[in-house]
Length: 346
Picture 1 (cartoon, rainbow, N blue to C red):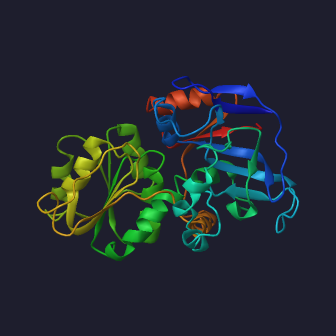
Picture 2 (cartoon, one colour):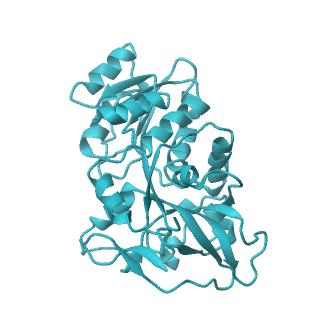
């Protein structure tokens, strides 16, 4: 089968031919209908050789949707042809966090060498992929695979972040979303569907600000040196009760802190590597700063239900498997408006 692999440190990903996978006991083989392209993959491919955490070559893709092609021995509850989405952060299934469905925070993943698909384990940007356990599959029924696949990360991750801040996003409150690309434009829709908050979107690109308005942002502000002052003015000097930084680089986290209100939440969703100082005098009183990782299995079911109810509409650009390296080039250049999706089987 064909697969997109990261094969050498610092090299561009390549489409190669690899052996067809076969499911072992407890595993599920999927015929991949859609695979998402994410900035996390670029972060992995920019990691230096020193301390690189994964074995190469590695098939990319941690967002996956497909149909069940074959079942390993002992698998129940699924049938060939079922349409499913893949829950990416695979855990041990037995620790206290996994028992809560929070496999994204598995307490034994490091000890046991467990990795998500596309981030250590073979990923979804291939004609077929192996899923380690049926519990990591969520039925999607008749939902469009292209529109659904980004929800497994670009939907789940901001959903998890927003749920934590729901008590603060009451009528009269403000939420700020910094970065309105793949994650951010979904976060805006989630905020509109789940809260009564006024949503202010920030980005450096006019195209992405236009997308933010299209998907429901009440205000769209150019993310420049005046952005924090503009948000303060729009909120009567108070600031935002919740800030979601979907980029996570030094300028955006600085802006996030500058627009935060007293007793607000600042959530660094993006993995740009920057941090925000916390301590007396650094931020307004009692600001909470967190950096979550993905979301729980139960939350992915909830995101899928929001999509089924028509509350989410992910803007996508599609590419064939042979065009997958181009999709990563365009993402790296900031030329994807929304989310890029690979169609490994056409």
